[in-house]
Structure formats: structure tokens, C-alpha cells
Length: 104
Image 1: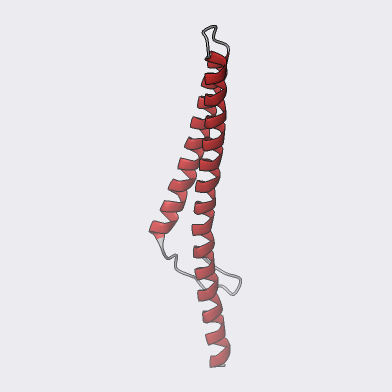
Image 2: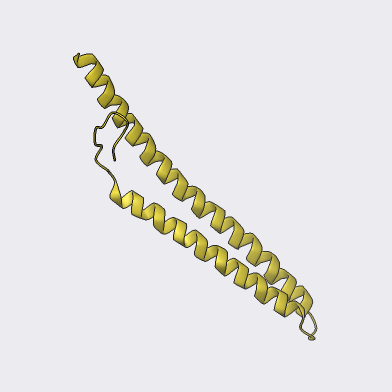
């Protein structure tokens, strides 16, 4: 990574970067799973058997609730990891620039 002064910062914590990407992929998969479950609930609600409407409504509600919350949670964790990495990079850059300033 290169900053405005032209110095190269080495990238640290590659495993955390990979974990953040994995969490984002899992968040998308959970959102898709929640939508598939919601569609299954809608299909169940159209059934003619006794209690099908209530069961379909519960499937719909639970799928949207848990799918949405799971997706939001995993995206938040992924972004938190990215924020911690950015804080470390900015701290390292500030330290480097202060050392250059004090060495003059």
C-alpha cells in the first residue's frame, strides 16, 4: 500500500483479511438462504391442508428474521475486522511520519 508521501506500507494480518471476506460471503449466503426459506413459507401458505397458512406464516417470519439478523451480524463482524486493520495501518503510518518529522 502506498500513501501520499510515497512510502510503501506492508500489508499485515492477511489471515484477518481472508476471515473478513469469508464472513461477507457467509452473510450473502445466509441472506439467500433466508429468502429461499421465505419463499418456501409463501408456498406453504397457499396449501389447502389444515394449518398450512399458519405454518407457512411461521416459516416466512422465522426465515426473514433469522436470515436478516444473521446477514447483518456477519456483515458487521466483517466490517469491524476491516476497521481494526485500518486503525492499525493508520497508526503505523502516523508513527512513521512522526519519526520522520522528529528526525529532521
